[in-house]
Each structure stands twice: as structure tokens, then as C-alpha cells.
Length: 412
Image 1 (cartoon, one colour):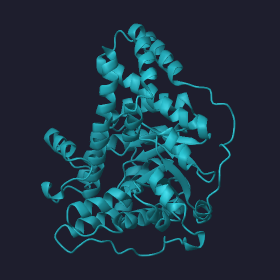
Image 2: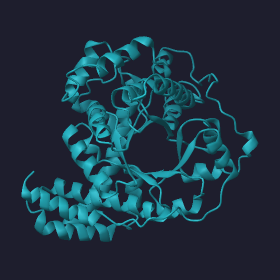
Image 3: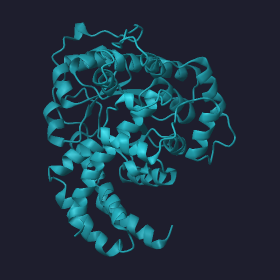
Image 4: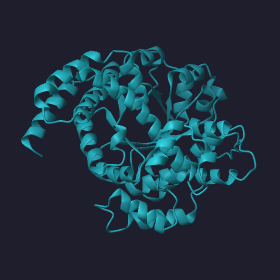
């Protein structure tokens, strides 16, 4: 790394970093419902980047907070980060002379994300999940570079979110070997997360369950009821079994994209639930005796019979041949140093439809439609979990574009 880049990194680190004084979470009420949830094995987190919303719902039973590009954009558009943007732009005026406009925006965005997360850390003294810029999702080196920088700002409290892409799988493998806590996000199936756990053992994997219910409903394939819940419970079972069989795997599951208090109650027993403030307020009046673990139950999802119904089986099935593929992949001597395209190729050669070869036009179509795809626009060979991951990534990219536009307005 050049001395100029090192100097710039030092300046940006200085802007992003804050000393976090030792302490405990603030005194707050305990929730009987949250205590009961924890007794059943679930760690509840709050899903917001908004400090005031977090304060409004905070209970002493909550374990962490998580942010993402959408939530960060909501904070930035409120104007609360404008002074941070202004100061960072001023500091870049000299030290960042050789940077392109997009590189400057990325650096300012890095500082903003750190500050949003640090506000939460300072207020609650708990771990906070921070997310990389979506433009890094298919770039191993940039993922490694910025993940290390985020972690360096606050190693005691930051958990780094990396999106689920071929490059993400490989980058997480490296970062976990360095001991970094990783939240491997944008997962939509048991098989995606099983592969992640076996290949890289991220600290956390995710099922974005609310979006799975929504994709069924919006595509008129059934009510969608229980679809995300089934995927989450089956993923929990698969990850738990893998942890028992392989001592190197310590991955825990996050049930994410929760839409209401009833989902929180039904998913009692899942390792972690990230709960938006509104859903948390719905859940907390739940009577503790009404909570039960459903991990061993079979969920009948609200999917109507039809030609598309079979596509959903891949969301919750982890067949023996897939597990064998994961074992063989993890044992490959060329895995270290592998790039994303090589991983895509191996999956294609082994008949694993994890990564469709989307064109530039395909990505634009995904981006235009938003986070819930119109399934009739896609051939059946495009796996649903892969399509949902790409749609989620593109929806975050749209929100990041809005955040970046606000930064750009300060560049003059």
C-alpha cells in the first residue's frame, strides 16, 4: 500500500473512530416476553439504525442491534449525519486529491456507517452489525479491505455484514480465519446457509423470512403464510446438526426481515431474531406462558399447487448430495486463493444452481422490480433463493444510491 493511501486511511480512521468508554447497557425495564424468549434459546436483537427508535423500545433483555444500507439511508436522509459528511468532505479536499468522486463518496459513506453504528454502541454498549457498501459485493479484495477497516474502528463492538455472493463466501472464509465476527447476510434458504457454515463458519447467517412470505403472496402463488417460518426452522435444524457434527462450525442463525410480533413468538428457539421496533412493540405484551419452541414441528406453508410450487422445496431442503458437495468443496486444495468466477464454475459443473449467470440486463430488471421479484419474468432454472438474494442486494443498492446522492451534494 502506498504511503498516500496509508495517510488517507489514517485520516479516515481518525474521523470514523470514537473511544467507547467501558460500561454496561443503560438501566431499563425487563420484558417478561423477551425473558421467556431467551429462556427458549433465542437472543433478541433490535433491527434499526435510528437511535431514537432504539431508545423508545429498548429493554435490558436485548442483546445487540443491526443496521443495513436501507436503515442507514433513512438516518442519513433525516439530516442527522450532515455535519459528519461536511467535515469528512473537507478533510478529503486535501488528502483525497487523487481519489475519484465515487471513491470519495465511498470513504465518506464508510465514516457515516461507522458513526451511525457508534451512536448505538455509545448508547447501549452492545454489539452492532454494520454493512459494507453494495458495490463491494462481487469484489473479494474490496470486501476484505473495508471489512478490516470497519473492524479496526471498533473491534469490541462491530460485527461486519458481508452479502451472500460467491465472492462473499470466499472473503468470509478469510475474515473468519482472522478472527473477525461476520454476519453473512441476504440468505434465503437452508442450503445457502449450510454451505456458508461449512465453507467459512461465519459468526451468523440469515434467513430473510418476511420477504419469502411476501414473494408468494405478491406472485399470487398462495397466502405465503408460514413459508419464511418453514425455511427458518429447517435452516436452524440443518445448522444445529452441522455444529454437532463439525466442531469447527460455530455459526448461529439469524431470523431476519421479521414483519410482526406473531412471527417473533412462533420462531422462539431460533438462535437470534433481529426485530424491528414496531414488531418488538407488538411482541412484548405476549404472555410468557404462551411461548413455545416450534423447532421440531412441521410447518405447512401457504403455497398453492402449481408449476412453481416445487421451486420452493429448495428453500428448505438440504439433501445428502448437497451436503456431500459442500464437504468436497471445503476439502479442495485450491479453495484458498479461489475467485468468485471459479466458485460459480464449480457449482455449475457439479449441477448446483446456486449462482445463475445473470447478465447486465438481468441485474437492471431485478433492480427495477425491487426487493420482491416477479417470478413469471424468470425461467425456472433460476433458483428462487439465488433470485431473492440478488433482488435483496439490488434493493439495498438502490437505497445506497440515495445515500450516496446526499453525499455527492456536499462535494460541490
